[in-house]
Length: 480
Image 1: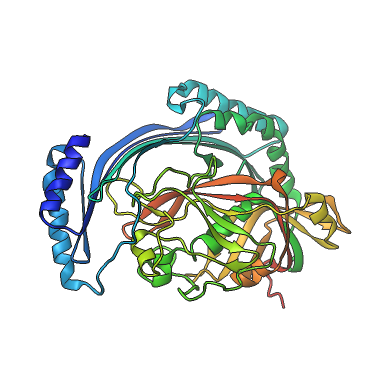
Image 2: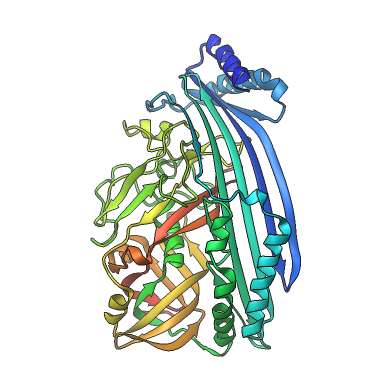
């Protein structure tokens, strides 16, 4: 394969292209889910092919195929598309410089998830379902596991040749209680199929699904009888799993530089940021955010992006001050800076675009009890249930599965259902006055980040610990 790739790149060089790269992807996925103690889905899929980018006179052409005997033909097709693209060129594309790299990267794992039998995986999910049903009368129980192995080859006309083998594992359970008037659910370790990480099957065992099944079952049943969460302006604490989505929607997407330039506006719009807003006050002094493609377990962790740029850690917000965008080689050149390595495609059939890696809120120095002790009356929100944000990433609304009442600096034991909070991005992050320490910090994986036209699905991560926010609008009433 290497000889064939290098030969095609030589052909493109003879056509005097500015730059070209070839990316081969071989992706295997396994999806297992159960519902009410029955198998709901049991599937394995594989997709193997290659994509070729060609840059000529400042324009780009892309072509892809699964026919490896026609790689040269596909490369010449990409070249013809680049030639045609010159006719509608607004400005010549330039690529920021990068190092020439010959390397191999592989996700460190202990147990290859594809060596574990489907029966063993199903048995674990069924055991977790039975444990949920043993603790409460439930309308529905769900369990799921997802596994992915991606082998990638990247080579370009500058001389880089990089191979990678990336593993992902994820799992989750959900308890749903219902009566004639209402339906409520609790999830573990996160909603929407659970939590995910770049890891082997050991990640599944570490989640301890069975051990946590009883607690979420009891809470789902209790929520049926709980009061609606009050509306008003309250101090709230948000747990790490919900903060992960808050970070994703109100920090991760706005800082994608292609959105900022408006060259990407499909699927969730552009950004309220502009290229000259470095130094903008994004939040309080307690808000420190990094883009880190090197952190263990993150779904946005890899060796090299699809420009062949090495994975790295970039300061995004430091003590509330905005420092950096997420960039590709193409967008970084517009700011006269090197790429920070966030250009990724969701497979061989798509050209890479700017995507989040792991956008992490760094831990603070607080114990959870300290944050709770600082609230006279408020709530502790856990686990995302719904979300909405405008196409500039400013006005947002999030719903959670459960709210725990805080009164006189203590949890009272009372819970509320259907908690919702709203805000405006910079005002919300400016209201943060404390983040829990490393003991509470955890990586959360998002395997379904949509962007682009045609749609591409990225796998990204967010590290977070519970944090406290002051004077937040809670509920759906017209709060003044």
